[in-house]
Image 1 (spheres, one colour):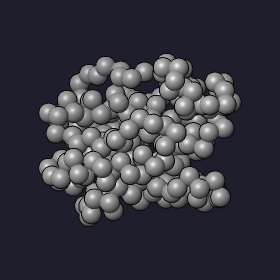
Image 2 (cartoon, rainbow, N blue to C red):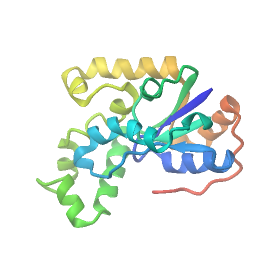
Image 3 (cartoon, one colour):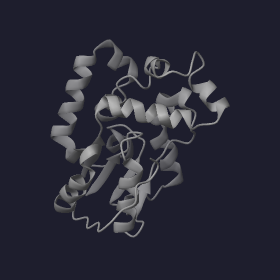
Image 4 (tube, rainbow, N blue to C red):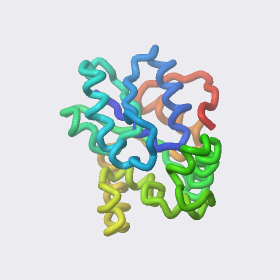
Length: 196
């Protein structure tokens, strides 16, 4: 069984991945996009698994694969025995956390990401921040989500019900770790928050 952990940015995924790596003696594959150019966000996220597959041709050695990839990576990798894991975050606190993360970036990076302004409204107007969690959990393109947000939301819900062994909210992180201990046999004893 391969477990794919969908790491939506700013949902405590870095902390969860570090717990998994320690618990599994670093036997966790990391599939992150090849670049950090967020103005190419969708392209990087969708093309990331193929890029990582070239870097990790023996990905089957990992029982857990974590990364900024969307639902559907199992098809790209040809995995037939799989389940997904995930963390979700209340949308308002998610956007605030994204905004704070962008403000910590160098000025030239902020300008490339938000060329029209640096307010939280400017961030919310960007295509890749609107419905970001739905984008990761549905596996749909941003164009498909924009054309029919209700259908995209239903697709994300369907994926979570059918293909996820567990998903929990960020604000219940400790309970989520306990849940995963029982669902997939992890045994974390402690953790340190990462990338907050």
